[in-house]
Amino acid sequence: MKYRTDLAVETVENLEETGKKPDAEDGVVVRREQIDQDIRVTTIDIVNPKGEAILGKPCGRYVTMEVDGIAEEKEDIVNRAARALADQLSRLIRHHYFLKVLVVGLGNEKVTPDSLGPHTVSKVKITGHLFKLFDCDGDEEMSNVCGMAPGVTATTGMETAELIERAVQMTRPDAVIAIDALAARNIDRVSTTIQISDTGISPGAGMGNVRKQLNEETLGTKVIAVGVPTVIDSKTVILEAMEELGIDEKEAERYFERKKLDMVVTSTDIDIIIKYFSDIIAKAINITLHPGIYS
Image 1 (cartoon, rainbow, N blue to C red):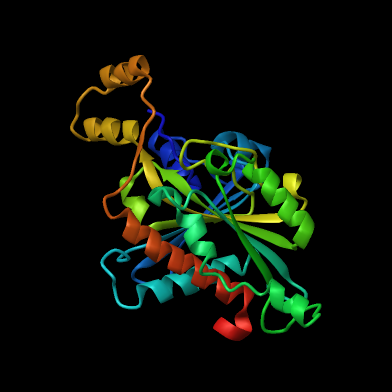
Image 2 (cartoon, rainbow, N blue to C red):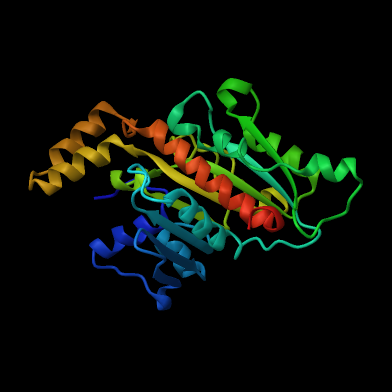
């Protein structure tokens, strides 16, 4: 059975379920690490074209951080998760005196499962105007950071990628951090998981509305994607439940094909999930880019 997912770790799990466990000889290197009792990290490096073909994703690093206890508000879980995520981000973007970064919050603020990006960028410490005001080339304690939430084409009438390309031309950053909603196979990951990668992102991918790629090739600068699965394909939920119950899912698959159903669903507490994950990601970005202020 083929499941829809934007998470590299779930793509690997799907292959393992079929007995095709990818390894270094296949161009896929997987490492797992337990950070503390509530946080674990899986790092997947796709190192060659063979690995690209096997996983269907471009060469690069994909880091999946799973955090237990966010919805339950475990003690200091947001700060612990933010610092763990900052540790991973700092391996992809290292602060230096002249560092300039554009933070982009993708998605539609009026649609809760798609609002992670705008909510996150609103909490990031923006400093670009200060560097202009004081005519500074750089700073030891903080980076030159600009931010934008370009909205979605359906509400702006403009192609999101083109707006971002123009912003990159204006700000000339060393890196772009793009935050967006993703889709998962496992509903449990909607409330536990963050994925970061250095291979870019397609705006709207999580909501099934894939647009032009944002990556180093299209923008001319490094693109770090940060995503949280906020939705799951309705077919995945139904077919997986049938499989768990030992019910033949082939008839259901034929039904979906006849009806051409293409729906995504989310959890009932998605507003809380968006709030906590936007806090975590914004804190992690601030720690990474402004170490003299937030570390």
